[in-house]
Length: 167
Picture 1 (spheres, one colour):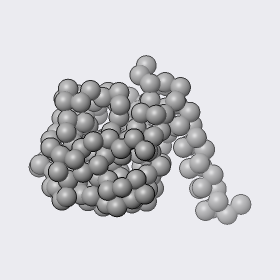
Picture 2 (tube, helix red, strand yellow):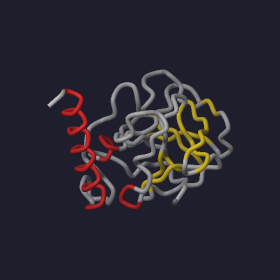
Picture 3 (spheres, rainbow, N blue to C red):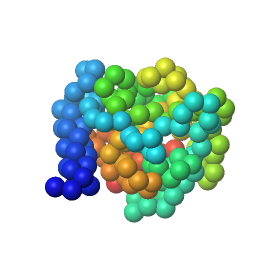
Picture 4 (cartoon, rainbow, N blue to C red):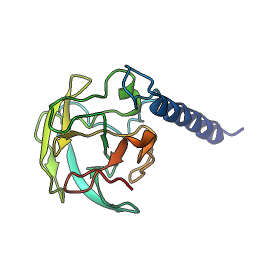
């Protein structure tokens, strides 16, 4: 088996476990938590003092919100809009890492909803859109992928106005 095939099988197995955990309520007792691998360094959360950025991209789901690198961001139905807290903690964060805000306000291009920040489940500043904390999906390994859409019936991409896309 080639190294590339082995890597693909590992990713598929990890994603399958994460999907199973999301639909069965694994993690810290809240439905939708998954266990899996963290995203690679080329995708996922902005790090350190770098300010996050949000933009829009065309997709089969319509115009959706992405980060500055084109990685899709998601909303979690277990969060309470505008509460200032994230329901994704513990093992959930391995599969659904928060979109970190960095040390400055997020830059915004094409996003019309209200962008803010909260203290995320990992204790770091997390970007919000219309009061919804934003997350990445570890199963999205390339910019523009939307593999997290509809996972467990509780994870959704966002449109530019900050509304979850249920489609």
